[in-house]
Amino acid sequence: MMQKAGIAKPLQMLTLLTVVFLGDRAGAADKPPRPIWLHINGIGGERRMDHTLIRGLKAGGFDADYEFYDWTHGEDGLTALRNFTQNRKEADKVREMILRFAKERPDRPIYLSSHSGGAGIAVWALEDLPPDVKIESLLMMAPALSPTYDLSKALSHVRGKAYVFSSRYDSVILKTGTRMFGTIDRKFCEAAGLDGFVKPEGADDREYRKLVPQPYRRQWLLQYGNAGTHISAMGYQFSRLYIAPMLKKDLRAGAEPLTPRPVHAGRAAAAGES
Image 1 (cartoon, rainbow, N blue to C red):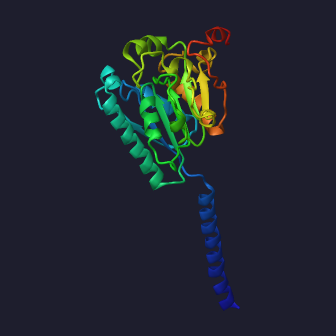
Image 2 (cartoon, rainbow, N blue to C red):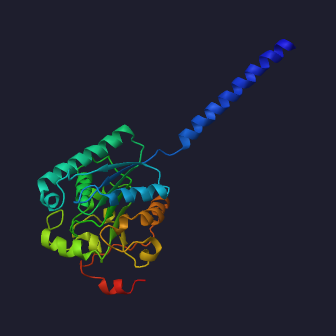
Image 3 (cartoon, one colour):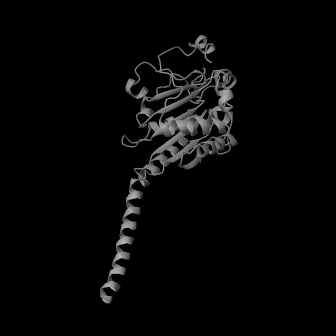
């Protein structure tokens, strides 16, 4: 009897350890893979506001591995805006980064965010991806692309949604500035970050349904400290309290349906927003 009791205890311990080990393995298998987030700054280079956006996402509970890519390499401002050939090369580098992410962990969701002129770099990078490579979501903050730029090809590489944050109060940069100096795609007009994108003739309706316009709301000033300026959508509180929950729950909070309207249309409606 003593011998059997001595054998029983080690067997019980072995059984317990096996259950714990297999339970841990099962829990790890059920846990979704940690996303990778790549942020592309604007023509001003990598700034504090870019890091503020990411700090807010982290504080808002959007758990991811975050990376930055500064495509200006110190040649910022108008130099970066006008260097179209180099900008296309920089977009190729971003494409290679996305390919590397997808190759290393095919099951890992990829999020891509951009600010101002960085939207062009992000869109061009997506356009040149292989057909089977897709990111989870795209965020364009105050995009300095022309409103009628055809996003169909880029959107075909977005599995989920493409959020576009715009503000009619961003007129100094995305109206006067882009009329004078041009958009990142070399059009001398108001940029999409002022009043949103307009689906051009011949664009893919199915792909454009992925667009989730996020036009500025005046109540955002009191709610999140977002004043509708060129960098306001990247503010800490707005990122923490609005963007992070929206992405986590995939809500279309404050979104409007995309309509094929003229770029200048909708200002009367804007005046009535509260």
